Length: 334
Image 1 (tube, helix red, strand yellow):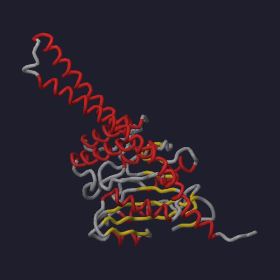
Image 2 (tube, helix red, strand yellow; image 1 turned 30 degrees about the vertical axis):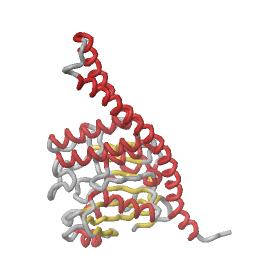
Image 3 (tube, rainbow, N blue to C red; image 1 turned 90 degrees about the horizontal axis):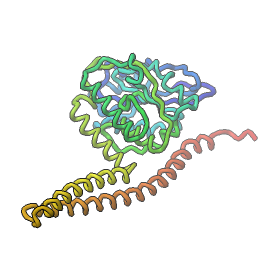
Image 4 (cartoon, one colour; image 1 turned 45 degrees about the vertical axis):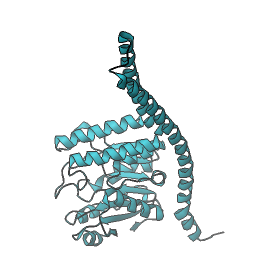
């Protein structure tokens, strides 16, 4: 840990799984003198590596947390987040251990947070078209599709919601309540956008393809898309339950209207219910399910209000812990 008389405490967190070839180089590339930063610490979360990742990280000067078994990128981020909050970090930067991100870009990434212009920043590979890295078209298409989806859900325009190089101000970090373990990148956007945290994308040049091995998260595009989609659906259901269940209710009501219209037109023409009694029964069932979905949305909305109150209390309690301890250790000069 590098200390200076004044400035904020920056924790650079690096999740790693079998990255012995690159993790040391990434750690040594972290700048040791950044304007506005007085304390710089590098934390590597070894997520069940079977090679010398932990040893190489310690040799390069990082503090290492070891998981006895693989918990996923989301699980590694949870460990890093807990460590940062418990030790009173003012800024938390996340980097990948594979060398795709240049640690020299950290000052540019954290600058908006240090200046008070944002509470959360993320490196953006696509905001500036000139910086778009070479990558397979399927990954490029998937990233853009995911960004449009998150933008539509949050009502804000984002160009890159999957990049792992990010900076969290303390207020943003304290308001993260994440459940996913496979990955966490898109869930963070939904989580912070729901709490109206100021988010800024910083255009940064990123290597599009790993130098060694394959991605642990996006190695299979279909698997990544399915699991990430499930995370987004659950997050949207929890943060905006009335919208989520309301859209389902409207869809069922539309089906009921179509089936009911068909049934009534048939009856008007023939004076008989047969042979399309099924349409009337199905229309009635859709109306019932639509009412049920609306009811679930109302209950979810009430529960969400209680969740907001509880998370506000948790936010204040979490913020008091390490800072109160630091204040209690300061000498009394009166």
